[in-house]
Length: 547
Ligand code: PEP
Ligand code: MG
Image 1: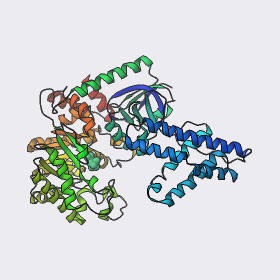
Image 2: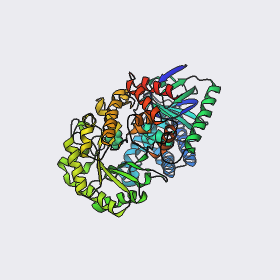
Image 3: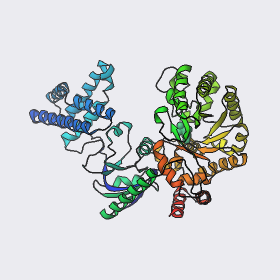
């Protein structure tokens, strides 16, 4: 087939090549009587052997040591004689090869779980081995990331974190998923890897393996059935754009020299990069994940100091704990809620656990005193002026010089001017602001169009905050995923944003995009986006004005 399918562009850039689908796990055929048990055993054995060899080959090629270790361990399990024995027992009990593999893997999985410790951790690998071996015995394509032997565009329903271990960035040119939204795992991974990506692209279901396609991670367009020479042209232009982005260095600024600090979103000191202008969002909850109790005061001081010490004289915006909803933190013992996104989360957890916030502010202040960074502190999920004022008072009482709040709730955006009378700065979390403005769960892949950061209503709220910042003479930035979109970044600046914060791999392309627009043209593009009837029209209007 040929034509154009549309989804949501979530990781910028263009790419073209042959498309290959990630095969789904195979379904078992209906059970049938076994005519030749020896032949079934031979087929099952051959399937397990081929899976073990396949995984071993991939392990040898994996650049990441962690991915290599996972694949090597999987290969050893597939080759385990005890697994084959279980499968043979299944055939002896009257099962065909595919069913015997399924039953044998299930038994082996149980045994690993019973063994506990390291073995129990590997039990999940059996599902993947089962899927691969069943596919091999049924003559279907191997599930998981395809390996056509040349660079290709990967099409998948969605990508699970485990799929990414096998993702070879030297051969995957772009990602297109049928499901997923702008904050899905696929989107975050693609941006981290610098791969163009389109999500929520239902039309991609029709693409047959080997079809030439062109992917535009800015506009969300998937052109199906491009000519080979057109694909080569797209690849050539994409390589030139990457070179231009890599060549742009230094602080962020518009073409006429208006500075726009490009800051990093980090979870810990290991996400910092040399030459960073600063940190616009330090997500401290990563320190609290996967643990039964809160980190101690000393542990916190150490983690905050590691970041602040690395950036003397630079801005570091530390966000206090954002627990609840999509970031459950068991140690708080929060009650089960029917609707956690609308419940006790973010700053609201300080209503029931004020001591957790106070310990954190005390630890940030201690780290601040020991370092020379320009430390700012902000609270997540603030809805009212009262909450903002109380947070700022608390932060200042701990000796922290700059206190601000995130704008993630429409009520806060609508009262940005009043909030700025109480706090020193605002930082807009477009991921949550989109979720709450459009009443759409941010993880809901099927409603991804409503979470599109180009939605004019969302941009309108950003504009209100920008105007409030201008009037108050105080900084207002964006630290949600929207800031990482090089086409949207100039629009955000035109809406009054004074800084943009994103993960490190997104910085070069945003810097390059800003450096080609004057502040006046950013304002013109902001007007085009704000007045467009919808997100697709907004993108188109801005793209056209850029060309
Ligand atoms: C946001 O909501 O945009 C944001 C930056 O916060 P988080 O993604 O951590 O919820
Ligand atoms: Mg948020």
